[in-house]
Image 1 (spheres, rainbow, N blue to C red):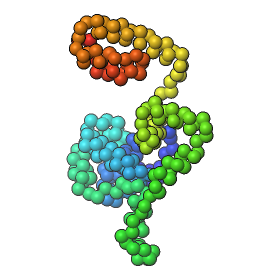
Image 2: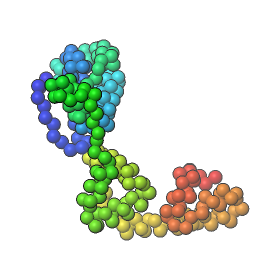
Image 3: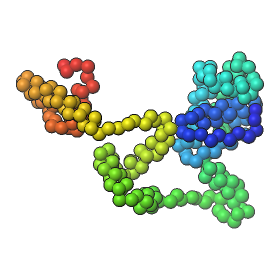
Image 4: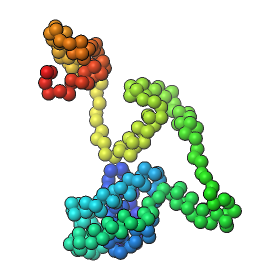
Length: 240
């Protein structure tokens, strides 16, 4: 097993897979879980890494790619890996797992040497206020970008903080997305055709002496109100 490995690749290219293989390989080579240090940038990433290692180890017999790569890293046979899986899993669950953010790891070191650093051992760390960061983000936008952001926020009907959370998710998943060639004229034509057929359904409902609930479900006048009012029946197989 190589002592030093550096991975540099785009999102969705398999870096996490390689890290999990390396972590599990160390376990199968008799390393103790509390002897392995894994550092990430965010609490979310640390939790996901911990969960990924656990779920992979739990279902290892159903993960042929992991078994194959662990065997290559450790020079163990695939049968030996499957046989020792339960022992490794038990030890993993009963140990202190050191998968931290960089901040948390540094804080632990500082606390260990708090006397030498002449600081209180129970010090607290306060993060920069989110409203300051949000203001800095808005300040960086030019006039066009700000207009686009406001339009997008209104279109998604989300609060400012929720929009920023969405951007974080998009940034993490960007490597897994396929780029679409979006054409407004095609979309507009499709909307017209959808609305034309929906209005035929609306006319049929309103002229069928049905309940007020049925009439309310077709109380739309454009594509947006159609998707709002029609969300209870558009996904149905039949209009009944």
